[in-house]
Length: 257
Image: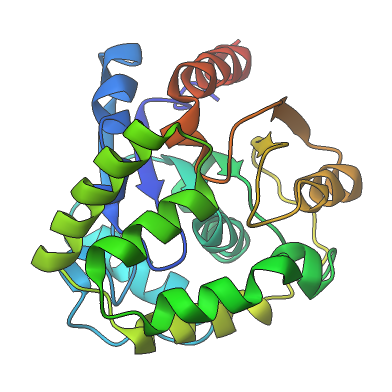
């Protein structure tokens, strides 16, 4: 597995885009100075925000792979780092196109075949999520999103929300995209075929959006390596980037031995 950690592709989650990685991309590049690091927006987000998002993970993967090919990201095997919904995309990609990928790191993700819906999207948040999707106040909405996905202090929360507001103003993600991505995630039930590539699961016990038991269920079903952060929220690269990069370094080193 000598290619592990050499050609990174980063995938974001529900109604998020490459800009939401923030400083983490630069931090990852410092940790892997010789690696190629690219981010890829899913259909309906980021540079593809004018494109209609499919409502199945399978179709989202098909478009994502087409975009990756067009952008030249598949010139060597990928190490995919994927958060939440992005983790489902990575899982399907590994199943459908295993030749593209040498390893994956899946952060706070879930599979409908292993976890019930009220754990995959915690029921306590349903009302808040509906309010977020309906809100026309961009800053207030982004503050609510940061509170939901992160455990940052108040000052860092406001700073992050302001940055995310600026991203939205440049590349707005529609209600339709958010809804179709929710539907895609909700009904994604992959088969139980074992993934042949190395997979690292990263999980946050402080995740208010998705129950940590979802990652544990994947780990148990497929006997994968699982590393757990005790306090970070759903957006692990935002809350605990140093810890996360440490785990990536250890994982890639192990797989290159």
